[in-house]
Length: 309
Image (cartoon, rainbow, N blue to C red; front, top):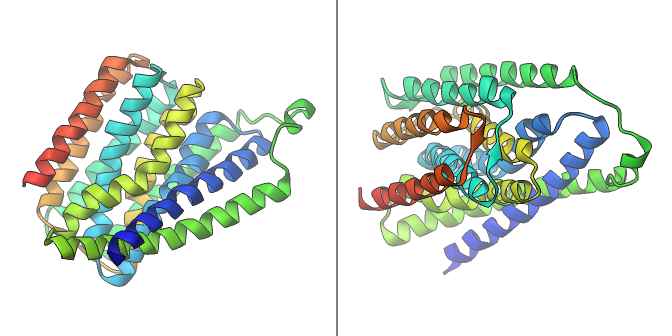
């Protein structure tokens, strides 16, 4: 019972903390006058990926490394199939050209790199983690550099509706604190549940922990889609997937090398496959309701496979 309480409390703190962090970070971005796509790809993506970062880094420090990899792969599958799929169901998403030309292929490259690293020896080493972090730094630099060229100052009318500077700081700091604490509780609770039911930690990471830590992405993108803010909705999904592999697994494996189960290779190949398959309808400039429904159904089918294997 204690494990379940820790798991639920951890998820609650993760979602509430990420919501506060994203609100503060988004307001900060508006004050800086950067584009909505950059907000989605960087600030919002980082805020909603912070739960995965907290969970995976905590798991690495505690030696529960299977959760570190399983959580990232499970979260990326959830992001692409459920978050993007349900967002497209609510309102067909118009795709940004920069996202299709640069960032979606980058998310595919990240998944391919991860698969190539873990396939030979079923281990993500410190050196490989450092390579992931280097690619992440380069990616972030290119995104920010490209976005700042189109930067516009905040006008007086917009400044009146932006969150006050003090509240921006409070939201960011309080949100991060709740995310870190929630991540620790979620890892402890998930590990306890896995042992209680005799399930593997990989399965817990790919399902319960992955879904719980992806709730911020889901809520953020659904709200953005409902408001017609397509750049934030899809930028959050693709940006989070890039952050999850390059930053989170990079940091986790630099802390301690991560042994990986052979089933994680299958999960990685599935992620590569769906990233390619659903890029095809998106590259036409629009992700409609039918592809969105198909994406959600694919996740249901994959979850059934995870439980059965």
